[in-house]
Every structure is written in structure tokens, then in C-alpha cells.
Image 1: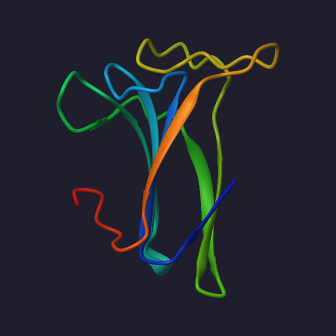
Image 2 (image 1 turned 90 degrees about the horizontal axis):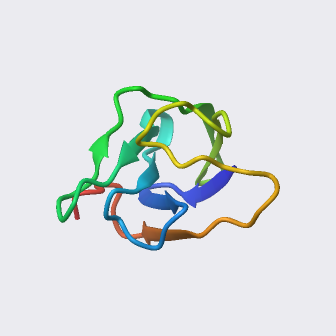
Length: 105
């Protein structure tokens, strides 16, 4: 679950502290038009959408915040996705922009 102020975006990198060849979840808080994406990093370029789309979920607007509830399999069998484990800690990193809901800024 991610709770963001409306009109913001956030990206979470799973299993790495670098965007290089990484598994990324992006959430964009834009009121009733909010969205979430299964993405991956490709070298030194901005992340791209992972078209296998292994992420499912929902969101709701409540009191100026967007609450995202997301899920995916621990192992999606997608070579671009990080294999999650309940038996070990995972590295992750994140970025958030509270001044815009445009992830390209």
C-alpha cells in the first residue's frame, strides 16, 4: 500500500539501489485519474513500461490523498522482474516528487 498526496508521483526500485536494469513500480497520484505502472530500467535511459504487466491493484482518493493497494506474485516468471522472497530482506530505493504528478519532471 502506498499513500501519496494528490498531484504527486513516486517510483520504487525493487532489489536494487540503481535504476540500471532494475524492476520499478511507479504510482502517479492524479485524483480519480491516478495510475500505477510495472516498469523496468534500461541502462542510462528513463524507465519503460514492462508490457508483461504483472502488477494489479486499485486506488482511491480520500482527503486529498491517493491510496494505492498493489500486488504481484513473488516470482512473476518475467526476466525483467525482481524475484521477491519472504525469507530475506530486499534492497530497494525510491524517489518521490511532491510538486508534480508528471513523472517526466
